[in-house]
Image (cartoon, rainbow, N blue to C red; front, side, top):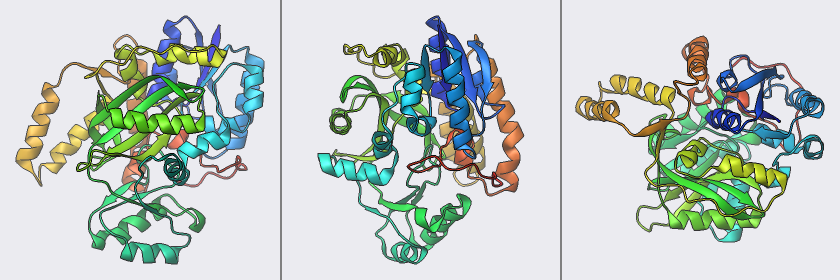
Length: 417
C-alpha cells in the first residue's frame, strides 16, 4: 500500500514519513523545493517534484491532483498549509484516495486569526482584544494610541512570521511598518495589533472526529527562536485542564475532523487561558505525543477510513522534544548575547550542555539524511539572511506557506525573497 505525504519542510512531516514507513507503507514524498529535507528520509521510496506552492499554488494543486489520480495511493497526508489549498479541490482528492481534509471555511476559521477571534467569542473562550487597521493612515493612528504592551501579527501566518512583541511606544511604529515592508503586505492585508497577555503559553495538538477529541498532547515551550517569542525549539508535555476545556469548545463548534491545535496564553493573575492562534494541521507536537504513548498517526488512518475512534491513551507528562538545528542556533545566539548579559547567558549555556532525556524532531542516527539536508539548506540560504530583508522566522516555512485567500491565486512571477 502507498501513501503520499506533502509539506516536507515541516518536522511533523518527517515524523509522518518515518511512522508510516514503520507501519509498512510505501511512502512517496512530494514538494516544490529540491532540498526539502524530510523527503530524504530512508523511508521515502520516491520523491516527487511539484511546482512551488508559494508562487504557483494553482499549478501546485493541479500537479498534485494529477499525481493522486494516477498513482494508486491508499492515503494522502498533507502536513502543512497545503491542506488549505487542497481543500478547494476536496472532492477530487477524496475521489482519488483516502484523506482527512475539512472544508475550506472550517480550516480558515482556525488559520485566520481574526476569524478565530470571532469563533472564540461566539463559544465563550477568552481571546485578547485586537485592532485591525483597514488603511495605512488608520494603522498609524492605532500605532500612536494603542495601549502597550502589544503584539504585532500577520492575519494568517505560521512559525512566528511577522510576529513582534512591543513594550515601548518609540519602537512600535518602526516594528509595525518593518513587518509590512519585509512581508510586502498590501494595504488590504495589514498586520493586526493584539493585546499582549502576561503569562506562560500552552500549546495543544488534537486528533478529532465529529467535533470530539480522541487524542491530544499539551506542552509548554522551554525555549523559542526567536528568543523573544516564536517557534518552540525545546518543549515539554504538561497538563492544562482550562486550556483543554477551551480547545474542546472550539473543536466542537467547528465539528472538526482530523488534526488541529491551538496556542493559549495563560493569564498569570487569573489563570484563564486566552486563545491567540490556531493550527488547522499537524504540528511538531506529534512526535511528543508518540513518545508519550499517544500514536495519533495510526489513529488518523482510521479517521480517513471513516471508522469510529476509541479514545487514545493519554500522552505522558514530562516528555521533552527538541528541534535540534534551531536549538543549536539558539545556543550560538547566546554567545552573541553575552555582550549584554554575560553571567545570565553563561548559566543558560551550562543548562543547554547538561540537558538529557529528550527526543529529537529531526535528528536520527538510523535515518541521518534529513538532518544533513537541513544543514545543506541552511548553508545555501544564508545569503537571504545576510544580504536581504528576508524574515529569518520564515526560513523553514517559506516554501510550505500558502498565501492565497478564499480561492487559489493565479500563477505569478516569483518576487525576490
